[in-house]
Length: 456
Ligand SMILES: Cc1ncc(COP(=O)(O)O)c(C=O)c1O
Picture: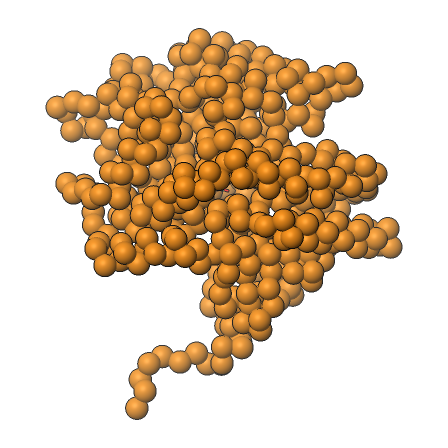
């Protein structure tokens, strides 16, 4: 007799089984019951294929993680090789080639400025680590009063309690507010806030001036300022001038605070350079990385730190060490996927080919720049965004997002607007034909959604 557990229904009921047993992320499950889940069978390059054979272009790289397509043969081969060697071992007291090589290569990408890598799994864990490291480094250096953090309005750094404390997105934060240790929130440098006659640099300077005031008021109390370099993604792809990062760097130096660059979403080539901070010509004290670093294959996050921070923990006294750990810290499979990802960057000159790819998609999306129903059409690297012009009514943005998602999905494209902001963050494998097709479908989905707006 076959004793293996069997699902109550056949595979065709995958979506129904999922709704019965799986608690989906970032989802009000009662609403999900009304909008059918997409039950996936497999992935092929930039495409996700459902159990009925329908294809969806993954135009948001599955929450910004996938860089070189699904089931990428080169990353697959690296993982298969690694599976035959070592799947996992604890990193305390042990080490292995993938974690060492990855640390060496990432440090080299910062020109050796960020000398050590501390590993975790999800982005939020890396943010927790960076916050703890900053506070503890100051304490070890005799500055235990530096225990406050500064974050940017509408910024997002993850949803564990420490990361949520430096996140300013009401939808994710408000319910848990009583549990949080509050951070200072300063103005965003979002270039969309430019008044008449102002440039993005003016907005950046204005935001930095507010930070300067705060750091002066709280002199000696601030451990770190955390920023999302160049693009505040979860805020709705709010983009700013690199000048802001230069000013934050200078202010952190002036006031004796660490600068944490959260490059979880914007790192790994997403903004056109491998690290977004490079475009400002600065390095932070701590840099968090996750999402694309494993090619979107496995949960991997890390914090790169300056040697001065590392040295603050290097001591005979155990308690002065950074004793943080996660069971899967430095997982060899995840590190090997990351090494294969870095190999693709180097072998295929990905940053250069992305520049060509980006120019094509920008041109194909150009009609949005003149569409009176859209505003702030913007682009940086492999990120595009625009905001729908909607009636100023409560719930309008949410309703738009749902309608647009449905329209895009019906056209075979996975796009999930953030409120009124439609954005594209595709994997770095779109060929010309697919890029043109994506632009056509995006424009058509927008058109159809806005016609419903008018009819509603
Ligand atoms: C800038 C930034 N930081 C942190 C996170 C949290 O990462 P994770 O979802 O892996 O915890 C995200 C996720 O979107 C992010 O965009």
